[in-house]
Each structure stands twice: as C-alpha cells, then as structure tokens.
Amino acid sequence: MDHAVIVDALRNPFGKFGGMLRDYSAVELGAHVTSALLKRTGVSAEEVEETYYGTAVLASSTLVVARQIGIKAGLPTNTPSLTVDRACCSSMTAIGLADRRIRLGEAKVIVSGGVESCSRTPFLQHGTRWGHRLGDFNIEDPLQFRNPITGTPLARVTGEVAVDHGVSREEQDDWAFESHQKFFRALDRGYFVDEVVPMSAEPSADGSDIAVDESPRRGLKRARLSELPTVYGSPTVTAGNAPGLNDGASAALIMSSEEAQRRALPSLCEIVGYVQLAGPLDSSPYLPGQAIARALSIAEVPLKELKGIEINEAFAAMPLVSTKVLSDYDCRRLKHLRAITNMNGGAVALGHTSGASGAPLVMTLARAVREAGGGFGVAAICGGFGQADALLIRV
View 1 (cartoon, rainbow, N blue to C red):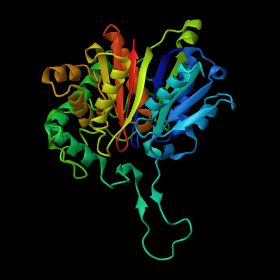
View 2 (cartoon, rainbow, N blue to C red):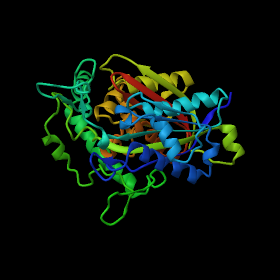
View 3 (cartoon, helix red, strand yellow):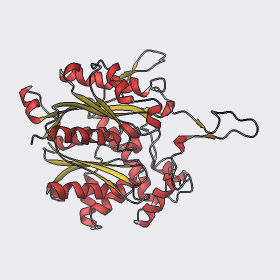
View 4 (cartoon, one colour):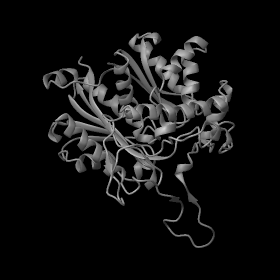
C-alpha cells in the first residue's frame, strides 16, 4: 500500500466579513488558489485525477462548488469532483479522503481544499415560495451560528464547556492576544510568504493586490480584550477571543509518494494518519484533543514525539480545552503542549474561513515542523455540533 504526501499547498489571504474579498464568489476564490497551486508545482490540469473541496456555510451559497471550481480552474470536464460538508472540518476531511484514495491505489494525483465566502452568504426567508398573504415575514441569518438541533448559540456552549474544564475568560483573552502577537512575529519574518497567494482587491482604488490576511490587529492591546462584553449569553466568549467571519480558499496537491518521486517533486510532508470523530453536541471544545490522541494511538506515535500542533481557534477556548484533555490534565505536559500549539498564531488572529480552515492548519503545521528540524506534527479542527478531524503528518 502506497502512502500519500502533500506536495504543496496554498491559500488566499483571508478577507474580513464584508471586506476586500467580498465581491469574489467562493468558486472564484477556490479557482484562483487551485490554478496558482498547479502553476507553482508544474502539474497540468489534465494530470489531476479528481478533486475534493470542503465548504460549511450553505455550501458557500452555490451548487456543487467542487465541480464549478474545477471547471473555472481549467480542469477537464471529465475530472471527477466531490463537494464535502463536514462543517469546519470540511477541507481537512477533503485531504483525508484523498489520502484514503491514494492508499488504496485508486488515484495518484488529487487536489483537495476548501472554500468559504461568508460575505456572500444570503439571508433565508422561509415559507414564502408559495405566497404569503398576511402577517410578518421572518428572515433567518445563518451566520448567527446556533445549533439547529438545540437552538443554542455555539459561543454559549463553548464558554460553558470551557468553564467546566477550568478554562477561564482571562486565559481565553490571553490566548487570543498571543494569537495576534505570534501571527505578526511570523508575518514579519516572512513565514507566510510560501503559503499565501495574493489576490487583486476588486474593486480597488489603487489596483493593489491583497497579500496579507485582513483580520489580524497589529496594535491590539491586551487590556482592550478584558473590556469586551461576552456574547450570546456565553460566560467567557467575546468578539475578542473568537475569530471573525471570513472569506477565503485553500488547496493542497496530494500525490502518492511513488508519483512524487517519479516527478522529482519535493513534498511538504507525508500523511501518516487521519481520523474523524463525533461526540455529544457540546463536545467541540475538547473533541480535537481526543481526535489527536486517537490519531497518535492508531499510528503508535508517542505524544512526546510531536514537534508541532495546530488546533483551529474556532474560539480561543478550543486549543485551551483540547490541550488540557490531551495532556490528561498533567500540568508539566500541558505547558509543553501549549508551547508547541499554534506557534505562528491561529484563527482568532488571521480569521476562520469555516470550510476552508482545515487545510491551512496542515500547511502551516508542516512548515513549523520543518523549522523545528522535522519529525511528527498533528493538526486538528472541530466542526459543527460535536465533530472533529485530526491529521498526523511527518516532515
């Protein structure tokens, strides 16, 4: 059985909600990054055997987004595609699906990624298609992010679970502040240059390209975070220790190791293992930690062997709670795990593009592990209402 490698991966700079990328559709974002990825790796569109793209918010307000991206990026019309909706896990799931296909010997060259355009997410007006004679119209905003099963806001659930695990508001604000600080330290030393493909701002007053994520705040003051009110009835979550709603896309070129060697292509990393978990509806804050533990167990890789960890900051609470669970509440182990988690900032700073967020975790993890001298790293992400994915890599 052959194993899969990620040859290269790219993402757009993430745009703010209603920001500089708001006039791009999710398909345009995905096609842009896919075309750039193929051009940089020298792989022709005809050589891509299939594609997987994830999305999370109303299928990015379009139909069969993976199919549309492939066609717009110039892939032949006979290239199979699959659009994946596993909430925020979706683009990591897309990588996991490619890994499985390659391990089974059913494909050698696959593009996997994810897209999201929160700025173009429509309001929903239910019960009006067949006419509405009297009374008020009710309009739903899907970007409120409530659990559709329980009606509970995700921010409230996250805050309550964080408190249950002994993670305070102060710790979450500290983590959020450091997320910004780490991001700018990485940005200033050129860490993201190989990860981000610039886009033109349309419309743009000066025609300049967008090359840097729009959400991070360089001048953020720690004291300001303490002043913010909590939201949606949450005991701890604020607009400052949660990410914004963002626009962006990501894509990874995944090959069998034999195919990459045949082409003499270097790789970012080898995919060692991939797992999916699901749990109770309130398990999202700690489930990434459990997914990491499961991936390590299956691969028989000791926790102490990890050189880097990425846990998506859907809220600052997620990496804080998940590392507690992963450390088995051992203080010394917890301190070490947090020191190697999200070493170059996370979604609280750079933004959370929902269906596109999983793949960037993997690409930035691979580069961080390389800087650490190589070895094992693991990325994990929670997804709507008690789901999580984890991807174990080796550099």
